[in-house]
Image: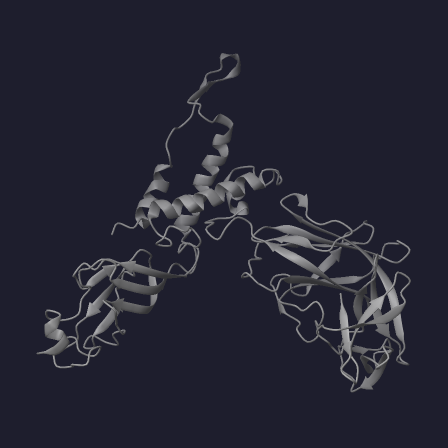
Length: 450
């Protein structure tokens, strides 16, 4: 991890460390400077790490900050080092050796040495960390914790610490009995953070008898398991299929492919989603924002593509912005109780609030034939709104489990109607329906008809 310091004259220096633990500096023209504050090994004094105008590293005492870090991490060409400060303000360097494996979907997604590794989302996996000393001797008596951060600065983590991602937030990795320095924890399938443009960092700390012996910050990739259109998870499907939950993860990728395919198919069959056909979001998986245009029908009600409608941010008819109705007597738009359509209220005296003339007898009210409506026209209605379910409906989830299970099982008899059993024991006949009947009912229930 690069560390940039600024001297009293404004010069920038990059702190370096060689494979023997020797510290040095190199003058640089650009970079984000920081001023790390470390507590000494005795836990009694805080020290500001700085640099002189000639590039010499220095420390300066400051007000003691309880709980402050006792070291920072630097990387040499072939090793990782923790740099600390003694009670006299002198620098210390200690090499740390670590191997990492993040297990998800039955495979090791990172091995030693690493620069980054992949963490699956919405999938149960095991996070394992192995600690040894510089001589390769396992450390079996440590307390190890891990925290996954979003948006943490690699060069200035004290200034920009990032946001912890649950459930890997101060998570204790327990020692694996009988192992050689291995610590692990099972991570539930709850990791599903929003997309983060600044990346993710996994921070692991270890202490022995209350003394910190290890700290590392590793860049991580949070992998999307499937797509944003998924209606169920691999674990839910495996729980639905008898015996599959205990069969391991060999077919997890196949099940995931079936889940994603059905998420796309369900959206197509019900007719919901983005108006232009881009399958980028699903109202069955959460509340989504939509921008759509419609042909005016000349009525007071407009049935929209997605439901249930949660909010309308803009409604424009023939170029005229329409405001929300705040009550029965006030003209404007209102979301119908079913959440499937937008209706227009004329108010007590008809339409006028959106126009220069306000009298219902003349002006815009008369010009538009007795009040505002969704006037007949081609693509003359513009609507921005949000719609969708806060949580995927239970019947939609169960339908997905059944359809995915059916498609997963069908792999073994593709294009077969029947199969003779060995020894003349009989014949197995396979169903040829597209969907189980109870699943078709669910599709019909949510299909847009207008």
